[in-house]
Figure 1: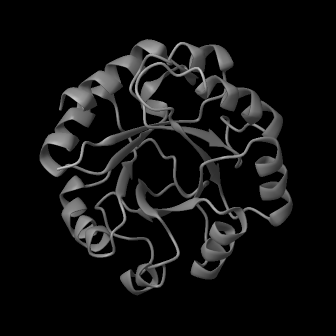
Figure 2 (figure 1 turned 45 degrees about the vertical axis):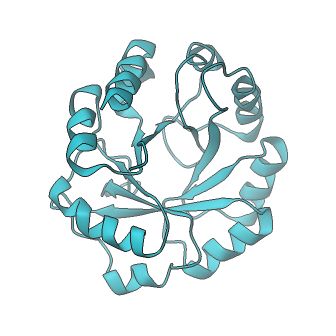
Figure 3 (figure 1 turned 90 degrees about the vertical axis):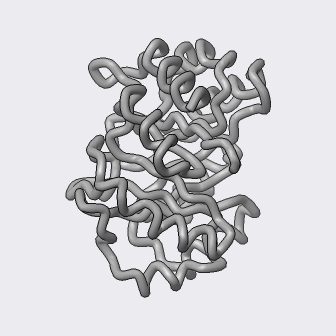
Length: 223
């Protein structure tokens, strides 16, 4: 069984990121969509340079979070901050995912909204259309404003059904939504997702909290 990867998303501060360089984090996420955590390509470039200072294990992979991005935004960000992964949270079609993947030659993760009961907001048939166009599936609790990023959990007992689909197609499954150091250990023990994506659960008053980040990483890695 592979270990569960950790993605800390919504980084904005160079200082906070530098305080994390001794943590075994697998992915660092930067938000380029409408959000209080949004940054631009110049800020992302500054943050990317910190990843080269990582001292614990391999350098984390950089992930850009977008919602229905146009070509101009993608080109601008990728020129100023060459990302390792593009994560799409909107209504991007399979064709759009394939186009972005091939244009930039990097992996594309697709976020898929589920309701509080863990049911897909779109049909399973639509999900099948993405086979061969994405490199990971991320489940996140639906938010009416942004689609994801609600900070709320969903019914985790639905995870095995989605794991069966991702394993069948040879891609990892990431879980997001309401994760904290207190509940992540239970999620890993019971369902063994390939990755966890956390943002608000490691913040205090909307700002990344190194103590909470450290506790989250330690709990997940120990699990």
